[in-house]
Amino acid sequence: MLSIISFVALILIIAIGSFKPNIHIGILAIATAFIISFFSKSINETQVIHGFPVNLFLMLVGITLLFKIAEKNGTLNQLSQLSLKMINGNVFILPFMFFLIAFILSAIGPGNIASVALLAPTAMVLAVRSDISPLLMAIVICTGANAGAFSPVAPTGIISTALLQQIGVTDQTVPIKIFAATFALQSISAIIAILLFSNWSQFKLSTPKTIIIQSPFKKYHWLTFSAILILVVLVMVFKFSVGPVSFILVAGLWLVGADQGITRLSNLPWDAIFLLTGIATLISVIELLGGLSLLAHLISILSGKSFIHFVLALFTGIASSFSSSSGVVMPTFIPMIPEIMSKTGVENPVSLAIAICVGSHMVDVSPLSVLGALCVAAAPIGPQQRSQLFRSLLLWGFSMAVVSALLAYFFLDISID
Image (cartoon, rainbow, N blue to C red; front, side, top):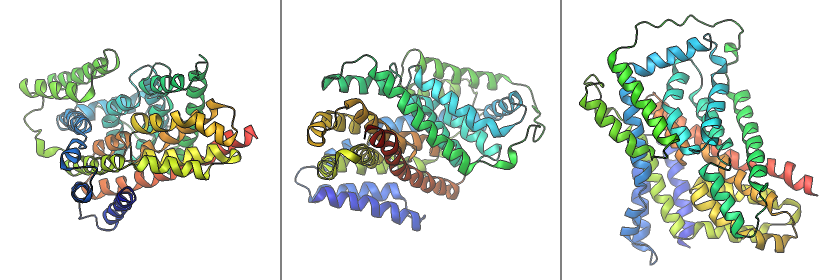
């Protein structure tokens, strides 16, 4: 019963935040998590505290502070002008460029979270300064990163391969099939976003406006740029975590005065950081109360062979909206594949795995996920615009649960029939 109540509470909190922007959703979510623990026999206050996403908090604070220094001392401005100059000022191609870069970074090893963490600060600044919808830029970065997430050498791809091997799927071509399928379906999502949210007046063969570098790189620009490069190398090549490395680099930049003495902790978007971590805390309570198990049970009731992929993609999408895609949803649903096959008569475990992988990751643009959270935190916009971006990404994320289900139906259910 409490699992249902906690789901309803989360929905109500999001609704309240949408209609009353002056009420902080994150604080409300943390308070609700503690209230639920008071009435629950299965969880206590300590478990709620442990549910606070420390890793997400450190990542958001560290990476945001590093790029806040780069923003305040003018490094991001210099880099954004150079980027625009490289594409001859044709800002229309920026979403395509960042989708491709996010895909490549994610696929070659670091994975989707690291890819978005590295790209979001620069990409969101470029979007705002180039009159590109921040919503569009957030979507293409996240979908690009997720398109590469199932590369056989990326963390998510490794997890899916290991989970499939545990249920007896050992064909060496399966990881490539899943990678190709998820890339194709994520690309469709990105194309839809570009068609819907692009500023088509920017679609010109000529340069829309002249971009001039107003001043050369100074010493503190080079120091900051070097710190960003060090972050990229340590995360991509040596597999360091983004959060700790960011803190170390921030400390170094402060010590050498590269921040020009103008970056303070008060500059951080604390409202966004606590909004995201607060929601994540409540979601951890939902997980502890068995919310995902409830969804799994509903699948066993609703599933039929003719639309099993539709149902799987839909439910994994819904579950992933409130939980970790690769850390919780995939380890929960992929082991269910043999049982689903026996109950529905489906003979291909790979198609079921594709439905789970696509469904669980297409919604990751949502600000309730790490990827969406990074984009919201990185956007150089005011509190009201940030709140609007949060709501828009939330709506897009939830809609992707339905879109992924429809894509799974057309490309998997119908093709199998």
